[in-house]
Image (cartoon, rainbow over all chains, first blue to last red; front, top):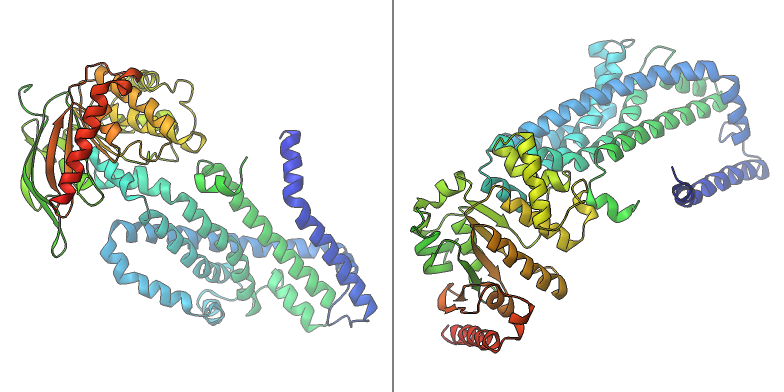
Length: 264
Length: 257
C-alpha cells in the first residue's frame, strides 16, 4: 500500500475511530458522574478488565459460537444461492414459490429456536446452525435473484445476436452480473448468522457457548462478564462481515457502481 | 450470393399491444457494402425496424431476408454485429475479453482469438488498453470497444442504434471518421439509426427518412458525396445541399401526418 493510500485510509476511517474513542470516554464519564449501578451499566474500564481476566474462557466460547454461525452461514447461503439460480432459470417456479419464501421469512426467528433445539438436540451445534441458516437464507436468496434477473436487457440481446443459448447467457452474463447483488446479501447474512447462533443458545446449549455464557453471567448478576461476552459477539460479527466485504472487493473490483462511491 | 441484397425488408409492420402501430408497410433493400441511415422523429419506429432486421423482435406482418435467408437464420449464422447507444460492455470482462466474447461462443481457439483481438484493438486504436476494465475507459473508448466486439466475427451486416448519440460533438465527429475507415476496411453493410441529419449525410450512401405515427418511409435521399469522406467533406457545398434536402423531407414527412 502506498503512503497516499494509507493517508486516504486514515481519512476514511479517522472520523469513525474518533467517534468510537469519544463514545467510550463519554460512557465512562457519565457512569462515574451519575454513579450508575453496575447491573445497569458497568464502566468500560471494568468491562475491559473482566474481558482480559476471562480471556481464555471467553475466547473458547466465542470460537465455539462462531463455528456454529459459520456453519449456518454456509448452509443458508449455499441454499439461498441454489434456490435463486433455480427461480431465475425457471421463472414459473419462482413466481409460485417466492410468496412462501417471503412468508417464511416473516416468521420471528425466535419462534424457530426452541423447535430447532428440539429437532437436533440442545447440545448438538447443528441445532444452532439450522437457526443461523434459516436467518441467512432469505437475504442471500432475494438479493442473488435480483442480481440474476435485473440484467440490462440489451446485454441479453447482444448475447442473442451472437446466437448464444439460454445456458450460455446464464453462465456468461446473468451469473457474473449477479455477483455484486449476491455479496450484498452475503454481507447481511454474515451478521445475521452470529445473531442466529446466539439466539439459539439462549434457548439452551453447552456452557462452552458464548450465548450461554452471556445468559448465565446475567443470571448470576455478573454484568461485567455479560457485557464482555456481548462485546466479543459483536467483534466476531464485525470480523466476519469484514471478511465477506474483503472477498467482495477481490471478486467484484470491476463493478462500476462501487467506483462511484469509492474511487481508488 | 453477392447479388443477393444484404437486407430485404418487405411490407413489414409492427403493432405493440392494442392499436399502437410502430411500423406500417416498410419496404427497404440494403445492398452489400452499403451504408444506410435511418433518420426520423422520436416514435417513427427506426429502432424497432433495426431490432426487427436483427431478429431481436418479430414483425407483426411482412418479412425480412438477410442475404436471402430469414432474419432468424441470419442471427444463428452470426451475420449481425450490433452496437447500441450505450456500449453495453460486460463490466466483469477486460477490454480484450469483451471483444473476444463472440469468438468464445464461436469456439475459436485461444491463439486465434488473441490474434484477432490484437488486430481489432489496432483497428479501433485501443492498443495498450486490452487489460483494462470498462469502468476505466471514457465513453468514446467504451463505444470503440463495443464496435470492435461487433466486428470481431466479421458479420456481413452491422446494425447500429444511435451509437454516437451519447457522446460529445468532438468525439462523435472523430468516431464518424473512424467508422467510415473501418467500414471501408471491412466487407460489411451498415444500417445506422441516428437523430443527427449531418451525421446521416456525412456517413451514408443512402438516407432513409421516416415519419411517425405510424412509422413509415417518407423519402429516400441518395448521398452522392465522393469517397473517402474527410474533414473537408463537411465543408462541401453538396454536403449542405443534401443536409437541406433531408431536413425538407423530414418536415414534409411531419406535415403529411
